[in-house]
Length: 263
Image 1 (cartoon, rainbow, N blue to C red):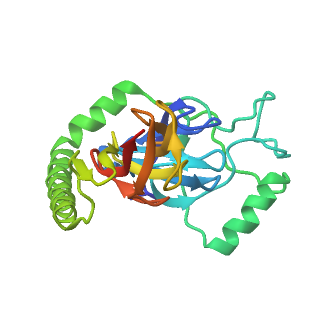
Image 2 (cartoon, one colour):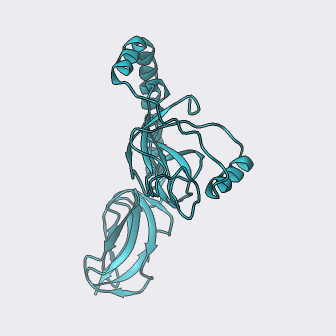
Image 3 (cartoon, rainbow, N blue to C red):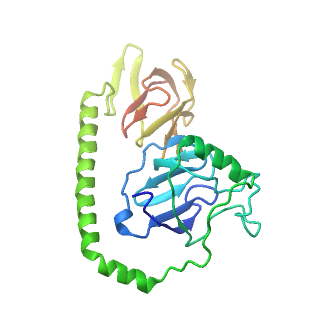
């Protein structure tokens, strides 16, 4: 399906540096995928991903949450000597361009990427191709039965897949060693309270150590979700009694991250 599809670019800058937001023209070529949450912290430049029904090419090494399907040529002109980048623009693609992919092995792609950077490899660009809206609507009408059958089957399969995720999440929550409820613990040294995650994500940084004294509103943990950082702050001046998470750990909303003691 990926190699049969013609991806119509509807927007640029979807993630970074001229990255296209593109959708297959034929609805039967539209894969429907979820996005990672939390997102990857690193996605290699030139990686091709799909999120929902949209295709994207990463213009630089960056975080990302799309499902990865391959890698292609550079789309951002960073020290690239290739005439495909026109009019002094550093981005390769334009609105309403159509992108097609062809299979190559990893070794061949490595050679092609370097040759493209150096201007020794040209890509096939068809300038006089026209997208006719009337003809497209006629195509959709002509193929409506086949398109409906495909989208119905796809929606059913996707709903079934989502149910598997929900069941897995429920099983994980039941077996988790981490108490997901905000609680108050009494100890000989005085009352302890907890600091919990506000969102689902991954633990990006732990900014405190056990036994450390911190001020009210001091940053204690940074979570990462969907390419964004969320700073968790201490609600009171306190002593860190326990750290109940690790860097890189996936957490759900209301998972207990720290136990603290008021000072």
